[in-house]
Amino acid sequence: MAITRSHRWLQRTSFGVLMVLVITSTGCAPQTDPQQYGKILQEVPRVEGADEPYRLPELEESATGSAGDAAEPQK
Image (cartoon, rainbow, N blue to C red; front, side, top):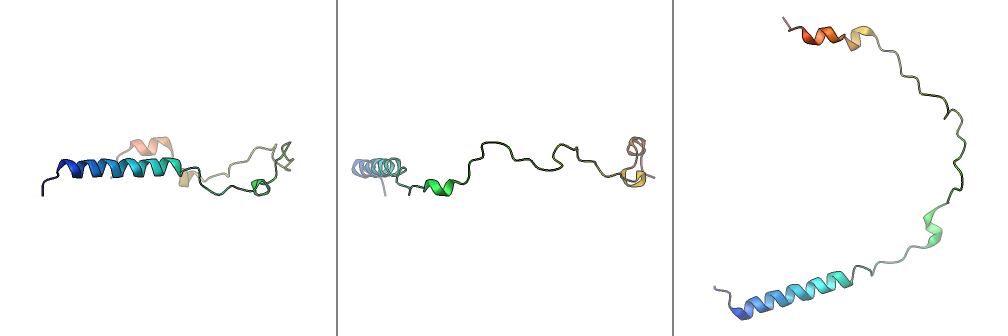
C-alpha cells in the first residue's frame, strides 16, 4: 500500500506530539527528600592503618617463572 501525503502528515504529526510529550515530561519525577541524601562529612575520618602501605605477598619463584622462560620455545 502506497503512503499518501495524508499518511505522511499523520506520521510526522504523531511523531512531533510524541516528542513534545517526552521532552516536557522529563521533569515529572518525584522529588527526593533531603533527609535521604545521607550524612555530609566535613573532614576525612581517621582510619587506623591507612597511612601504612599494603605489603604484597611473597610469591614462589616456581609460580612466577622468570622472564627468560617465556622466550624459550616449548619442546
